[in-house]
Image (cartoon, rainbow, N blue to C red; front, side, top):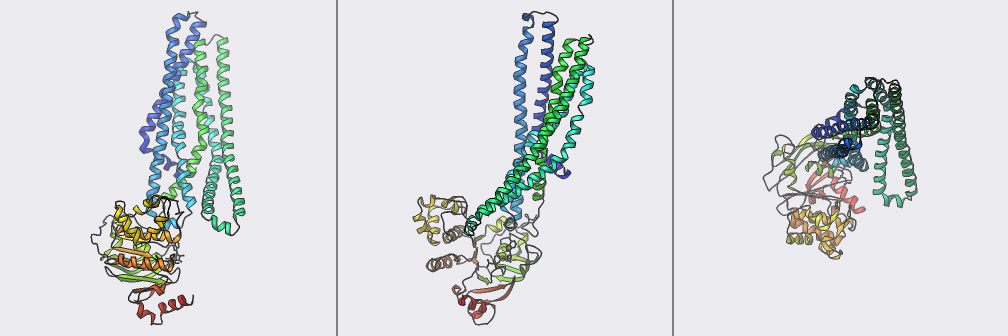
Length: 578
Ligand SMILES: Nc1ncnc2c1ncn2[C@@H]1O[C@H](COP(=O)(O)OP(=O)(O)OP(=O)(O)O)[C@@H](O)[C@H]1O
């Protein structure tokens, strides 16, 4: 069992210590009541059988059994509720911490991960923690507290029986430790398989069209069936160890109870023990082992929680290097509605190599820059750096003369409208998707944005107009329509900086022209950085930066570059030839 994950699991219990102690007190009171109930039963029977007391005189004692049973039941409910509450609270706080970490790691880090793997960790991983706090941890305490209470009650009644219980009790934890190693390995194997299966299933689901097209669905099905079968086998291995160890624990407990029973029986026969004490310890003996046996059955939950915790702590400690950092202590906010940008010798890489190299560019407030370059030359990465989704490895980005790393990130991002290459459409209605950009937008503002982005005819065609529900990935909207939705969001956002990652790529010529006109209107008075693939559509007076292999290799006005026989002219020629 990795010590780090066990101590992390315990650490998480600190904020819910009060709730857990409440559960333990309820459980302990339940054990004390059980002892009192056992004594009452033994006393009643001894009085009735050996002292020939009439039922009428025993009636008050007999009647006391009912409230005792009810109180035990109520305490049991309170104890389980408190423990479950603790589990739910811990899982909620871990989920929040993970969510914050994921937000800090940012979309560039997330893009490099398997989505299925993250979902498995966030859902199944956190769910695996609940039984640890709701079941195992309280049971661990009960395994010490309840036998101690029972022993304290049994000792005055019969020291020999108490001695047998004390002598045999350690056998159970010793065996649990022996079985623990195998259970731990099986749990870790099972957890790793679940993660792999989750990742693969999500990938298969996302790429279903591609799989169909390549007639690879059957192969994928076979693979998933084999993984599912392996997962079943590993789950069965964990359960087998859990059940086998439960049987062995049961055996030890039964033998010990039998020894107590034999000792009690013989001493009753020899007249060395009175009936009341004998029956009392006989009733207590099974209860003595009950929490230890229950701990044995809860142990595989601890293994599962530890396997999941190892993964969750790894995720919580992940720092994307170099990633969008947390808010610096000296964060400043941007007050201006005019944004001037300067890249100064900026370099960045996702892995070992750089994909943006020594880039220096200046865009004055209210100006427009068009970035062009071959695919993979680093254009989108440049925008990601500007949006502070990642931090430059070298160099710096200045916003109105202030270093971007010193700015309040949320405040900075409020100044940006971004139209990406592939606009994401969230699950919800079209209206929800639009209001994401400006939650307080009025009906009139919505209407204006729809017209500007040429989305109004699309809305008119939808069965429920703006209230038409859209799927998680925008099912119901074509690529071009999604692009227009993204443009409408930019319109609604009304920010001083516009970042456009080829906004007309998926559109037909007529709609592209319509959007370009709308964008020209939107761009007025704003700073605009636009990535363009259709070089023909670049206006003669536009300021252009040409990127190749992460570097800015040429800058200047489009009309000048067209005749300069440089990188831009070559791109243009290649574009026309295609
Ligand atoms: N999240 C990522 N993780 C790792 N590498 C990435 C990631 N995003 C982009 N890259 C790599 O960085 C390089 C630059 O990518 P980028 O998307 O910035 O290029 P681009 O010029 O915008 O390309 P395109 O015109 O095709 O959109 C490419 O080699 C790409 O494979």
